[in-house]
Length: 516
Image (cartoon, rainbow, N blue to C red; front, side):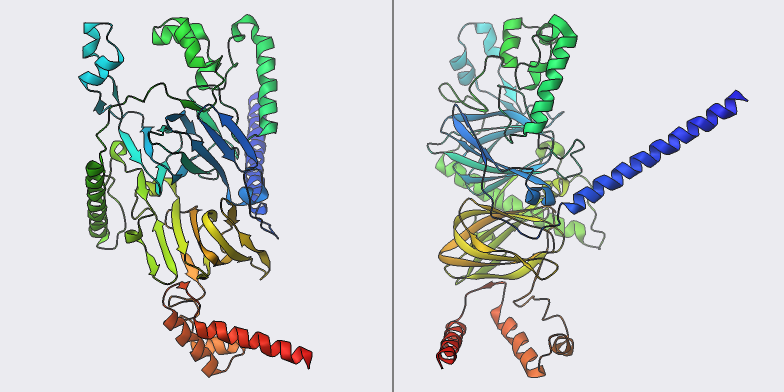
């Protein structure tokens, strides 16, 4: 009799547990959807600044309702010449845009071979203490170059570092896709540093306070064994020095350096001398040759991709790129790669999983745009992605409209400001007299837009009679509208003199009527 009762009780607890989990999941999803109940958008600027030995880190508040809606966090790092951004990895995939400068970076993929080896001259220059050590050359994974206009794609959990080997500052803007399925923690952006004693880049006070309380409780419970743990902010600082010394077979002084307990240089440090790593030469001629090779490889990749899609399957066979040879960067500034171009209005370049396949893994894409003086990027909406716009140069008058037809943003967007545009919200940009440049990150590897004007406008695809009845227009007015959109060409528009003159005359007519 006891066994059936026990079984029945266990089943009840199991059902309650499952229902509780499902209810929590539904509540969590509902909370995520509720984050996008926005009746107003703002142009956002960084609100947290951390100075380091060789640079500055600035971040936007990830708890702001606009970032909560689109599920991202944004951080900008300025690295001085000879500065090194310490090795780290993140709980979410990220796209890094190089706004200014050039240098080198490393991305470490677990299990991939160390294919770069330093020369004898490099090894002897660093250590002349012993002839025996000449044969122990340093080996490491591939080193990659970066320059202004590059987008660098970094998967979640992949350790990376940056070094500024130029003579001017490097400015790198990173977007972390917190809502990505690769992040199974929470909605907090987390950078896991392997070195140093860095501060929290996003100033998440509540989480930091809880973490400190847990650390304090752990120290009280752990006694003297925990006194050497948790004093720093890198991964090694949380382990016992004695255990690490045995694992690495080195003395505890070396381990204390790994733990960074006495570090005060921050997350960007100045390299003594110059950074000595194995990498191919980068003279001007070599750089031009590499860029030509890169463009040729890009064309080959596109050709292979078209051939692999032939037949309509649209599936990848898994060997287009191996994990260890993934292309991680693509320059989005190059005018020759523009997808939309109007010499009088500007250009748009898109970067997605078609031209950088790793983005299929990250589920992210990017867009670079340049508007000439007074040019307009026609009204459009992203129908499968959120968009995060960062202003590079100039100013523009921007309007965003929601599903109720309400203008949720109608203001000037200026340099170094960010505007988030939720999925399906319509947006229009009009450049000022000094032009307008921006980069936009999108939360889909094949982000698509649907324009309201131009040759590919949704209105041109709707029958004229439908438009006439929907908007209460005469047939001739609808035809004129369609013909004008055909003449406009693409979605980048330079207002004609006739339209400007017409609006000027209309304004004067209204003023005369008012005076009369």
